[in-house]
Length: 443
Image (cartoon, one colour):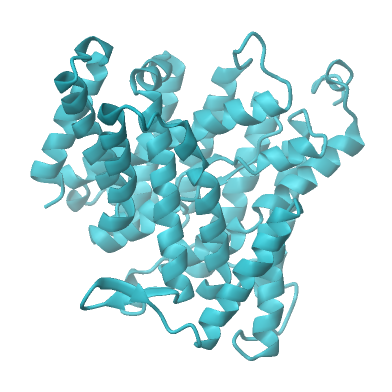
């Protein structure tokens, strides 16, 4: 094992890798609570229960997808990078696809499966890098920041801080409401711990909020701490039923699949480079075994869709594990082990409510908006498409819409500015695709 993971060459040992893997798990364990609530649209009161995903099954799918993805990354990619259903992608799955487009969740899983297959083919063929390089870096940062704003908006809504207002569309909620106060308390506690640099602050913040919620009878006290693992049957293999349904084959699904693929593209690449660079694994500004790492990610997404969850992707929280000493894929195996162990703690995690997870969404949004500073705001032709990409996501309640608007305006502003030669031909293809998206796919 030591030889396979090159412990001596990288100057690490089992203790460092174990602590790194544990730290990564604690930093991203919040997904076990947040993902089931997001995918089941727990905060949407008027949504028919018959159309919701099963909470217990999604919890198991989340844990298993994270475990399987992290194991593949550890063994094949050999990177200290853990995987799990991605934030932003799960919001797109639930709020844009299922709630917005009224697409059955089985069809949404089908879109995740197909995007994963495309991701795999593009990775194997080498086209993935060409497409990524064709898209200007400013728009890549704008997409990340826009998703951050979108997730934050959902978090504030779940907390009751922002509510519907017939006169102004949105407005400030009742801050004296007990559940809203619980969410605000959780946010303050999490911010304090994050500011102090405590690893796993988001997860700890939710646990503290749950305890406070139980004390004030806002959250049901679980009868057991450890219990039987919920059944995966409600979601396992449901993805394949969508392929036999003629209603799956619509123009709307094309846009959905492209968005899943597009967002996963950049979420993945950015995380891999950032974590590898932090761990000192970059060589000549290149990522060794990049193909294997991307292969691991695409397989994880395919497996995750079969299990019953949204796109599985690399987690930037892995950087916490690297900071604790992790340098090899063994740390990812440790993280995977903890995700498997967490399956038996469903009784505790299942009582968590949207106000408790709201701070996690807000904090993740803050972290994703860090890319704002990397956009060249001094150039108006860059600022316009970047800004529209970001602002359209929360305002339209759709990640796909934000991407489409930004990619339409970019060629326009660049051509008017006389910078036509800087526009990659692939961007013109995106321009046509997204114009068609607004003409046909958003109906």
